[in-house]
Amino acid sequence: MQSVESAAFRVDRDAGRLYNFSAGPGVLPEPVLEEVRQELPVYRGIGTSVMEISHRSPTYTEIAASARALLKKLLGLGDEWHILFLQGGASMQFYQVPLNFLPPGGRADYLVTGTWSVKAIQEAQRVGTAREAASSKDRHFSYIPDPASWDLDLEAAYLHFTSNNTIFGTQFKAEPEVEPLLVCDASSDFLSRPLDPARYGLIYAGAQKNIGPAGVTVVLVRDDFLQRRNSDLPTMLDYGTHAAKLFNTPPVFAVYVVEKVLRWLDGLGGIPAIQQINEAKAARLYARLDAGAFYRGTAEPAFRSTMNVTFRLADEALEPVFLREAQEAGLLALKGHRSVGGMRASLYNALPPEAVDALVAFMDDFEQRYG
Ligand SMILES: Cc1ncc(COP(=O)(O)O)c(C=O)c1O
Image 1 (cartoon, protein in one colour):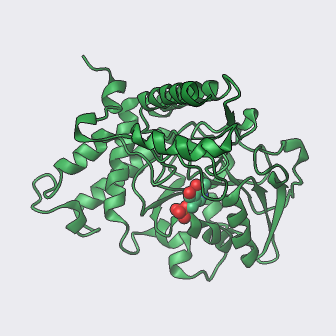
Image 2 (image 1 turned 180 degrees about the horizontal axis):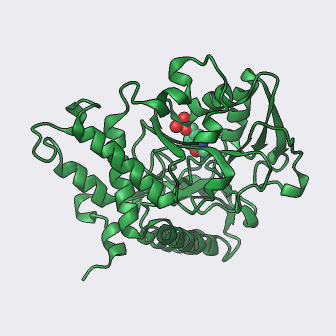
Image 3 (image 1 turned 120 degrees about the vertical axis):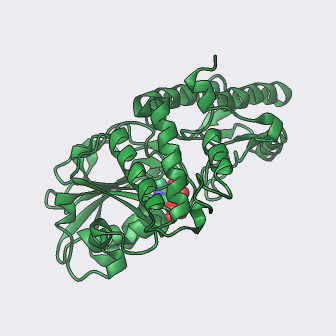
């Protein structure tokens, strides 16, 4: 009999599915894609597809309620948490967060650990006083600054951080232990490991890396934090609007797929199970990087991400050859972000462990031929 894990990570090579290391939009679980396929063009006998029904219909209402219930179960969230399905990507949150929570005359702290947190603080500075409490820019964002060095403001309305730096391949190994509530951009490691809800006021994540297709941003906001928001906000940018009711048309299809990914994750054993799988995948690839001088990881070892593994070849001139041959070997999207170059293997929740085995085997072979 097939194990739960091998069924969850099946890849239909005969159908032409390859191993996809894309940083986002990223790989989705194949059983989810299959279920979506089966539910087109008719969803469960309703005579039409999910894309063609009212967002106020019982069918969509049930899907969205199930997605919320699964998120609460997976993350251990109580009823004090609102779960919003918004649009505009994580990038919209960079502005929406300070617009709501940076009070006039107040201040917020930001930990600047990569390109996305640079963008987040820039947007906050349009709204008010957003302070850089720490930055790792001095060493090309290859590490997470030591908490002892953070210049914290105890009066800050919140502390914003990016839990995983998608471009530079670093990740906070522990949640910041600070007085103010945390606001987290968890776009690239959401639901990959547990979090302690008590520390947070708000968590946001674009779906397209770990939990679904592009088009929906999941926002978790705690009610006591929500009540502190500024007044007279533009309706659509006020979290209160969306917490109170279904104000406008949500991204129905994206939420429908997210619900399936959450069910997939729950069936696999939830966050403890996926965390173990993620750590094993990352450990295997980092061990290969460290096995000699031919490959070189770019993030400082203590801060290496389990989600985005960034690396170079000692001979950088060989990198285009590596990327081309990897693609030919069926290993997709290993090119590093255009701002940093090199390679990046994204190992999101849905990436099968066998994909990492295949990448490591390719790396062994490539080194034998070119090393
Ligand atoms: C950590 C992080 N934050 C924000 C973004 C931007 O997300 P979006 O394109 O959904 O606005 C990304 C995209 O890669 C990301 O990785």
